[in-house]
Length: 312
Image (tube, rainbow, N blue to C red; front, side, top):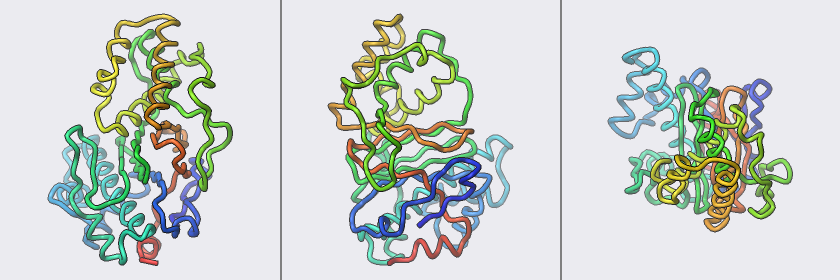
């Protein structure tokens, strides 16, 4: 399994047990990478042939060679390259664990195939029985992988967002309608228990607080990415973009909340908040009933990573 590192500091639980990882069925994985702890993987990837394309190679070279154009840009380059590499490692591990690849070499070759994208921008992995999504900030990346119909994730560094008071309240109401309402803690070995849209509480004054806006935004991003398009196009397709611009007051918030709850229910999707530590906010959108694991970390050294990628 992939052990957790710095769990006490960031509240991230350890990975799924080996027994679960070895099940001959696809499982859901959510993996966090941090540029301050996992940058060594880029040098490891160069040495072990885990760069699949010219874009990957150039991104790795910029970081390993220290040729970034500036502090901020270099940090983004590092995390972007690290996130894409982690997505390939997560994919290879799942190909092995689910029996879709019969050897480490086969899993590596398939994981290094170029990532394609649908016409709406969703990443697609050739010959893979599952769905992959990833997101990154300047200093952290998140990868989600699931066998279900839906899979989308987003992560943002903790900060204040500025949308204007009435639009922020509408965004929070919309996102609250999307969010799965857990009746208990999510378990790594089973689906999160959620209530149906009719049982969800209506949007409250608490949803208008500034600290509620960033969690709302990552839920919306995750749902849009699971549906395979950008936030603007996703909101527009459902008439919500206009409602966010023109609506105001409790009735408008209640309407958006109800419409979002009805949409995820009809789509068979649930959007879950993730615990990725105090410095970031994250969410993942999965098919209703999909296994919701705790957030994992990659192994902390080359030997542990090689052992974890070895075919069972």
